Structures are given as structure tokens and as C-alpha cells.
Image 1 (tube, rainbow, N blue to C red):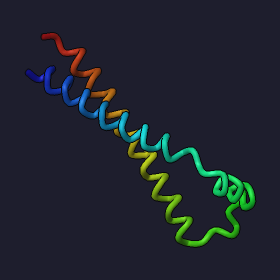
Image 2 (cartoon, rainbow, N blue to C red):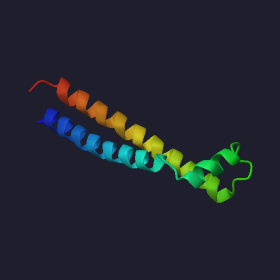
Image 3 (cartoon, one colour):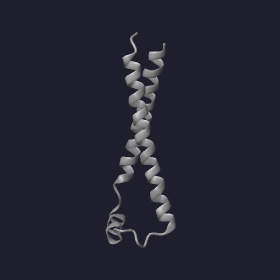
Image 4 (cartoon, one colour):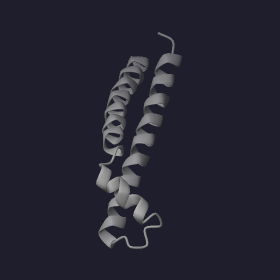
Length: 84
């Protein structure tokens, strides 16, 4: 019973993590205008406070995706290691 909880919980976390990674991958490809704008201000010296806050939020989303993936891997490894 415990191994099933970890295994199925790990699968659920894995599916959510894959969804978050796919969403991040979709957002990773910028439009041409934002691509050129990013090269114009590489050091972000002209970035506004809102733009810096937006980048900080994206960093948090990426950290959450990595943490979710780690939890999924841990749950699956525990679920598969416990004998039936």
C-alpha cells in the first residue's frame, strides 16, 4: 500500500512537472522583437523595476519546476524500491 502511494504520487508529480516544463519551454522562445530588445540591453541597465520583478518571478517558476521534478523522482524511486 505504501509503495503504491509513493509510486502513483510520483507519477502524478511527474505529470505536473512535465506540464510545467512544457509551459516553460513554450514561453522560452521569444518573439523577434523581444529577442532584438534583449540584445540591445544585455546588462539590463535600462530595465524597469517591473521588468526585474517579472524576471524574478520567472526564476521562481523555474526553481519550482526543478523542485517538482526532484520530488517526483524521489517519490518514484521510493515507490519502486519498496517491495510489493
